[in-house]
Amino acid sequence: MENLNKKVWDLSENYDKQLNPNIDAAWSEFDRRRKSLTDTKVAKRSFLLPLSIAAGLALAVGFFFLNRPTGQQFQNLATSENQIENISLSDGSEMWVNENSSISYFSSKEDERTVSLEGEAYFEVAPNKAKPFTVKSGKVEIKVVGTAFNVREIKASGAIEVEVKSGIVEVITGAKKVQLKKGESVIVAAEKLTKKVGNNIGGWRTKEFIFNKQSVADILEEIQRVYDVKVVFRNRDLEKCTFTTNFQDESIDNILEVIATGLGCELKKVNDTSFVLKGGSCS
Picture 1 (tube, one colour):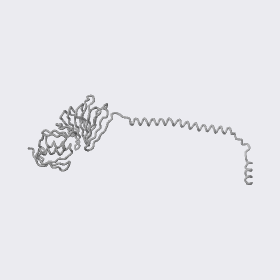
Picture 2 (tube, helix red, strand yellow):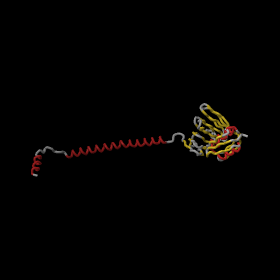
Picture 3 (cartoon, rainbow, N blue to C red):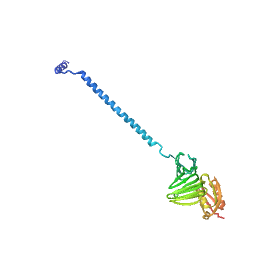
């Protein structure tokens, strides 16, 4: 302990007696620096705040423009197998969409009356001369004012069939167009227009069919398509026979039984979707 005290005493001899610190000046310098640091932090905050507000406004405006409605609004519908949908449109028109079809249609009566279709649909259009009703299917446009008609995409060939039940319909493809009236139809394939007589227009939705001296081949072609069945003739001569009958929402079994009885042939049911007609004659 005595040695430690002696070392402290010896070091004290080196103390600079001329050192006379200015306490007040030191505190003044400390206070100046403290205020300088504080002001800098405040300045940074006031600079960042407007930036954050601006960034928030930019995000909000961007969100609005990305999500705001632009132009005409459409609704979409896709039907599955064995599903038929009836839709009442905002302009008072109605449409029936067949199975395995998809359609995009206007949602407001203020919109242009435009519909895009893949598959098959039947339309009953409310009259409006100022706004024609347009159906687009493939490369075909169908324009009407007020009428009832059926549009079908023939998937095997890609052709479009348009059948008119009432009123007048204009069918356009490329530079070609044709006007159809009640009972007429047209098949559009590769910009070629082939007119024919329409039969049982839209019959697929009501299952009501009227056949007046039509060939058995044409009758069964329509029945097979609507009921999604396959009917095979053992006697191919029967296809040329003409037949007059009508059906109203009947089962496929009853329809084929009537045809078989009228032709004097035997009906064999292979399964729910396959049938065979044997024998018979046109007389």
